Length: 161
Image 1 (cartoon, rainbow, N blue to C red):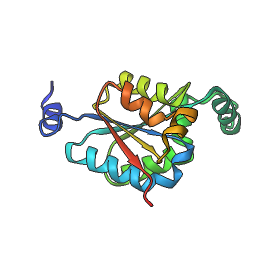
Image 2 (cartoon, rainbow, N blue to C red):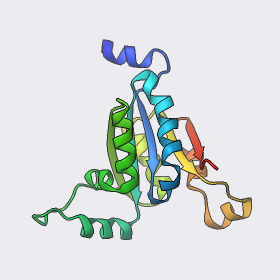
Image 3 (cartoon, rainbow, N blue to C red):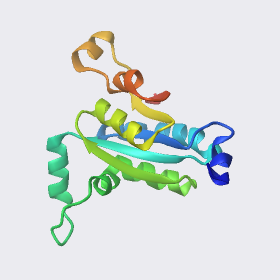
């Protein structure tokens, strides 16, 4: 462990915070940025901004964002161009927090957990909304899946109302 790493982890043990975002998070960007900033800034942790595409949305996004030369776009680069991820990254970097975009395809909960494992996340932050027990049973809950399966503690951020 380098001295820099030791300095970054002494107070809280956090080096990497993963923030899972998606298109439905546009209403809670302020709350997500505030929550992640409060967690990451004091320990100079890097924030990995993760976007999970289902196969159809990934294909659609690639078709819309092919670069001028028609070359494929790296999934992580594609994630950084998605509206919510881009805004979150810009705001966190403006506050002096290092960020890196990450992406994968699959279901949202499984994808967030997989990226958390890949990057060795010390904390995961996810947003969500209040949903009835019946709604969770019928539609599922990404946040609940992440909380149960993540390899580290999870912070849940709900919409400000």
